[in-house]
Image 1: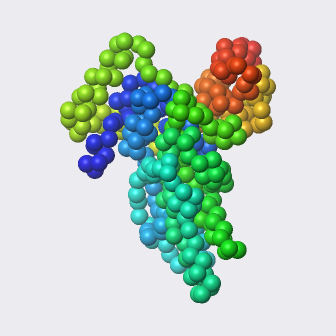
Image 2: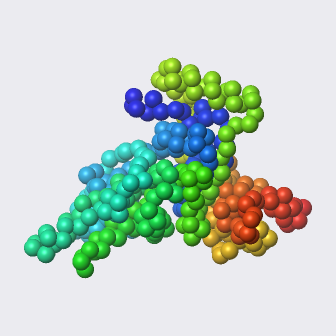
Image 3: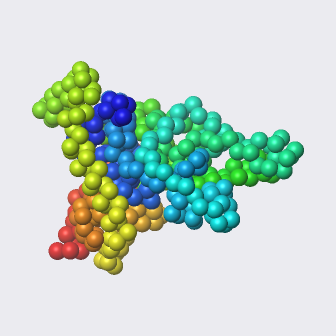
Length: 345
């Protein structure tokens, strides 16, 4: 509890609305594909991700399971829990908070995916698995600071697991799989190198952050930070109510999400926006609909409207537009607004 109070409160962060919105949307709907936050140093990227931990909801989990399986979701259980269910055993459960699991830049593939004891498998004919970071990340948030500095192969493994919801380890003809459903959050400073376009495209949402340019808001950033450093627990107490309100909103949105509907006009709008913005593939179209549905749920609505599509486009498209030589690939948002006006008067 003390550790939570020392964390900078999420609702005390000044500005950076897109970054905060993208993180909250991924907590509500882990199927959005994670978020990559790009920005220069000192723009509260890591602070915001760590502050998110205090907003994460409690989850029901199988007691003693290293993967924290959901006892009410047999389809996503690990092999041990599935076997117990098959034998008719009752799984005991407890509650725990979702947490942010850190993946260090220096992590090797074995540290990420886990290891298999081959000697034990040969001698005993049994699989002995030493869990890695992906096992801890199941049903939590996996945070990678400086994701652009991570080995490309490890990034491939991460994105594969995030997309499939499963981590598979294969060594010497022996294989083992376990559930790995997590929200992937990466942060990076573009000045220190970029991600390959193939990897970039697989992040569901991307947000670019910059330092505050408004003097009054910049002063507020300084003031709050100094107050926090002087008395972290007292400062956290000032934002308990606003944090609790956001926590309740997230919880309500999670319950509402499954009932959110969209009509064919919204599907056509997603397709037209992607074509007009010259986006490759279909991930953007699908991502726009899923993100717009989650935005509708966050706003307490069961129907997606054009404004949700507009907002979703700002998070789903920036990293997917085709860049021409010597162009920055900056999104022309006015084009999207024009399309929405044409489609819906």
